[in-house]
Length: 189
Image (cartoon, rainbow, N blue to C red; front, side, top):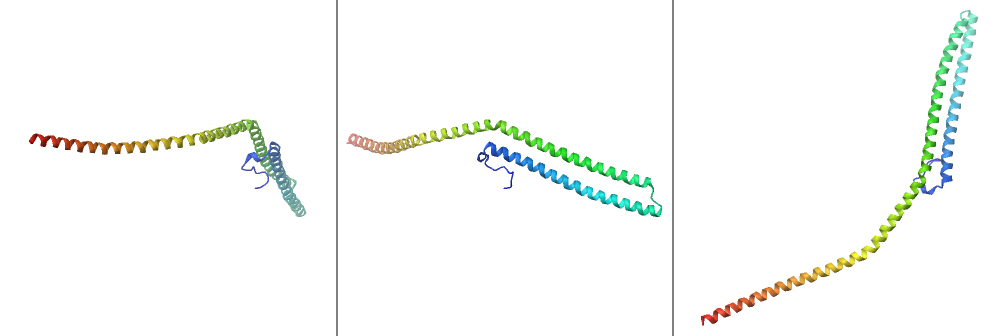
């Protein structure tokens, strides 16, 4: 990870470390912006100084030839001034955008700081809920296992009873049939 990147686990940074990290990030942005602006301005100054010196040389050569007039120089300088004014406007817009980004980041940081206590309370509450649920689970599992064991025994017993009743019922029915047959035999005799 690079300097200024927020880690994935926010609980590893203290408030001071997080504040230093954000402050460092903002300072880094400002330094980068200033160095970029300085570099661009130096490049532009060099470029326009070169163009002005070329115009001056051109004018001097034309004056030597008797062709260049003061109005030619004024027109060229006004053109240069217009180009420089456009560049200044663009730079001012870039500065404004950078300031807006910095303001947004500062407001975001303030918002995060303001909500920090609420999130910490929410986290603590969630941890308590998880602990309570785990305790409840630990208490209920043995009870439910005993209940299942009891139900399985009852089921086994009732299955045995049903099987015994069926076999007793068959025996009773056979006995009854035999008795009826004996009665019929007696009557015939």
